Image 1 (cartoon, rainbow, N blue to C red):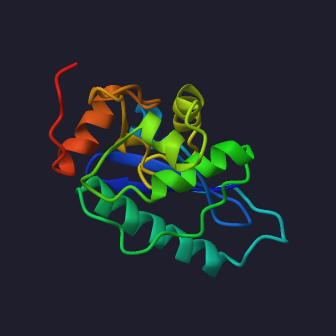
Image 2: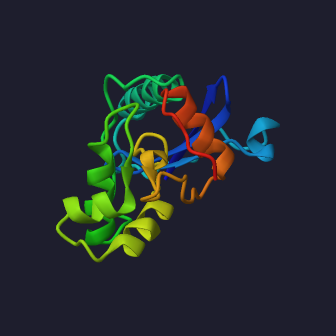
Length: 171
């Protein structure tokens, strides 16, 4: 993996790139805020050229900053979803279709992928999402309109949805 830091108004995110594209995105942590996270890891010779990684980094940074500001990203970098099972990949692709400022329930996602009884598994796939924010798992909520869960903390989910203008129900 090739890792780079992305500075945003909400902190430093860490983007990890594989040979296929963006493979993981980590939320700011105390360590990254202090600058202790390396700016990159060395990549094997077979990796895409450095210019490709820089382009993916720029695309990731622009998409991330737009999404954090409550706007739709204009372009996403290539996404490497290979770490997920076929089911998880289906769920992640369904989440990519949720427009900015909208939400869907876990049950609605389960229905969209033709697995209406897989609501809990959809929730698990949301929690395993390797590229939160850009694959908008924060837009997936409980059927009653409550927040549901969020692997990076409910404060992030609330903030992201509020930035998109989503009216939240009290927990």
